[in-house]
Amino acid sequence: MKKIIPYTIAILLFLCLADMPYGYYQFVRLAAAIFFVVTAMDEFQTNRNQIGLVFLGLAILFQPLMKIALGRELWNILDVIIGIGLIWYYKMKQ
Image 1 (cartoon, rainbow, N blue to C red):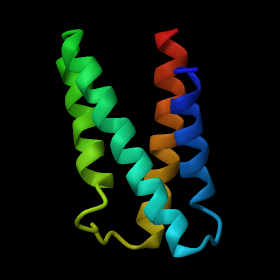
Image 2 (image 1 turned 90 degrees about the horizontal axis):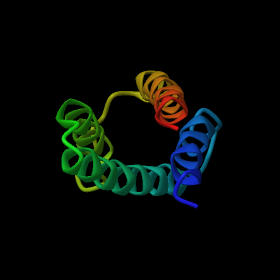
Image 3 (image 1 turned 90 degrees about the vertical axis):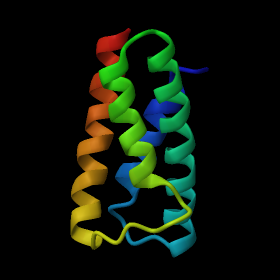
């Protein structure tokens, strides 16, 4: 079950390219931030500190408390890059 979560987050990020209601983007930010924090903690516990810092940075980027205004175009680019990166990372991790 745990293996499906990163792929689900990647799909949620890809769906951000569509014209969705604003509540969807808020949900994605919350879900992604929680996932990135938990993953960062897991990476730090296994002494993979560099990748842990990457996930911590992503958690800060997606945190829902203070919106980081990057513009729709840049967010779309980031969503695709991060979605592809998640799929790649978890395929390599298997």
